[in-house]
Length: 485
Image (cartoon, rainbow, N blue to C red):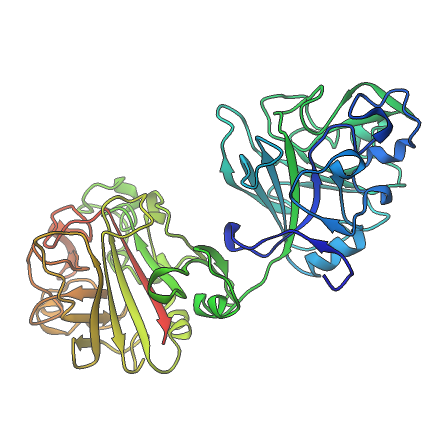
């Protein structure tokens, strides 16, 4: 690092870019090395060492690998942490390990803060709560039957009066803490995954002494805890993230204010997810709870996947329920991801909605963006004319995946392309085989095709994108991606 330190960086988890700022792999050795990991009562070391972020623990090398003695608990100078976090949005990550030698956490959670504020300053106490100063996301939980609520993050710097609730009143050490409770004391709950300790009390070593890990633990026990920080960066597209060195599939922040899943591995990576459907009807008419939409009170414009009602600020590959089971992207944003020149549209079909690997996967490579994904122009593009078609993968045996046609009928325009417009079917994005954007009725062809509306009404039989009344090869999830070439 430019601050003269070296430290472990996690470049794979949830988009990577995590800087390790603290690691604890013993309960007492780092607090009172003279006691050789026994309880610190009677130790000669100053009690300020009970604070993991006390200057006595600032290390020039912060590694994830376990260490012994005083090095079994190390941290980072708070001003350096602030530099790593940046001035704007940042994330704090808490990782808990089943074994101290493990490099993969058992439990992993992230607090995403709106602003740095005075967090990790030398003089200000912070009592931050979930859904107020930050949002909380569990990346992984391997501790079965336990809670991982991340309700509170507290920062009590070394040398300040720890006046936050009962933690300050009883003289417990300062530092960084995360867990559940009404104050920074945090609850005594061995069913809750927390970063919590009681090393000192009212100017003395604490009698019972509860360590961060397993000794006298008042939380779910762990053999190692790691704390990470990263500034929330934004790029214009998944291709831009890929170009900057990101190589892991996952959610990434975009400069347009959205976050979306990026596929960084398939066919060169850099794919930006622009739409996902994992239920046939829930996203169209949530009131019907995934039953056919006939008789639904929702506006029929919702039958178009790219209608504004489905534009999402977070587009994930993971399946969702209700209205979120079908989400898309504002067309002008799609145009920005695609760029002004050559671009590719990818259609992925999944055997199960929870799958991250498609069963069938095809790419249409366009020579120019033109008016595709514009607000006013219909597009009827055909293979080997406006684009070339490549099957990346086909797991549906005995089926066709010709990709003969890609149609774009934006919301609010007259859908006048062939029989699709004449019968009043909904607009949107479609791909498949046929003489018009109606597309053929062929359950041997892999297509993105639907009939939700007809002539100003809900369509009687109603054919969904996936399996309900399917007029194409059935799937449990469809994802659409874009990238500039």
